Amino acid sequence: MQAQHAYTICNIDELRSIALIINTSKEHVWEQTESEYKDKIESLKHAISHLQKEIVELRCSSQYLRQALLMDKAKVLEMQEILTKEITDGNIQLQYLSILLDALYKDWKPE
Picture (cartoon, one colour):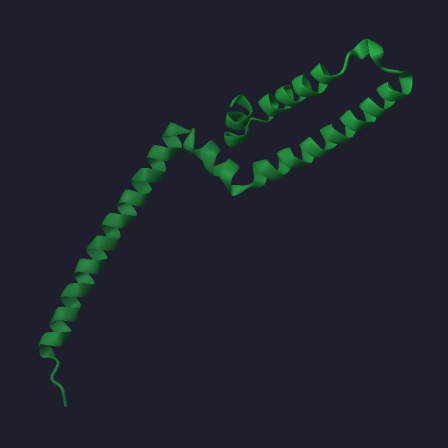
C-alpha cells in the first residue's frame, strides 16, 4: 500500500527507499563475493541512472506539473479566479450575441 501511494503521488524518494529495502533484505551482505559486490554496484549505478532519467521525465510530465500546481493553494485560487472571470465574461458575451441574434431574426424577412 505504501509503495502504491508513493507511486500515485510521484514520491521518487519513497519509492527508492522501498526498492532498497526490498533489494537489500533478500541477501545477506556477508555471504556475497567480491564479484557479486561489483555486479551489485554496477546494477545500482544502472538503476540510479535509470531513475534519474525517469525523474526528469516525470518532472516534465503534465501530471507532475498539475500535481505541483494543485499543491500551491495560492496558485489554485488565482487560477480559479481567472477561470471564474473567463466564464463570467463568456456568459456576458453569450447574452450579448443572443440579443443581437434575436434582433437580426426580428428584422429578417424570408424571400
